[in-house]
Image (tube, rainbow, N blue to C red; front, side, top):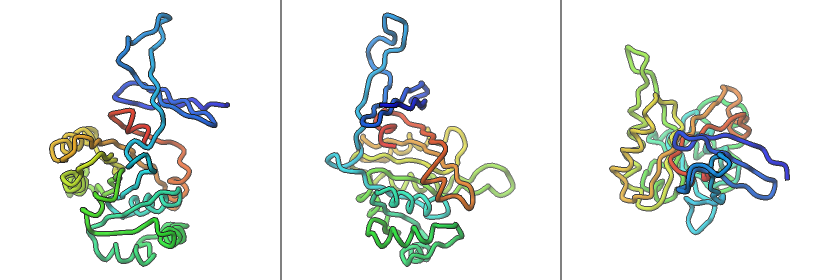
Length: 239
């Protein structure tokens, strides 16, 4: 079968990904000696599996923040076949989305939103406990507006999402930041989640989005690149 070579980053080390038509596996560094006899890096295979889902089923997704990025991501994931719950603290926004009304302009999104709602695989809520109980993989899509009087990003909403969700995660889960944030934020959020989550099987990863206004649906469903910042092979394989 033809294979497409890709290169990802896992714990700041290069990771080779080899996908075949009928099979796929991720290779990462093992506990064995770093080099083979011929000097090439020794790699260990990890089977692709839904490691963050219950009983090997397809993982259920949550999206925290249903603005431009979050609403688009939630609808697109349903289009790709996932069950999704979207969270927002704005009750009016949740009501509009539940009614099939997109609160901003983006070509193609209203039609996909109504299709997703009709399928029964998408719903919206203001209840963070419902989100924690439902989701296996949680995408944080909250806004990072510019701080008044400066160029720095306001991380209030990002930090609030992680700190509110983490204490409710009592089983294995992956929390994925998609918001645009300064360097070092993912590490801080990882430490925050580790200190707050009841389960020690909760991981943090980052998957920044590249959306063009007017092409957000297309860019989400057919991206020209995927960037993952992960701490384990399980997180890479889940994403």
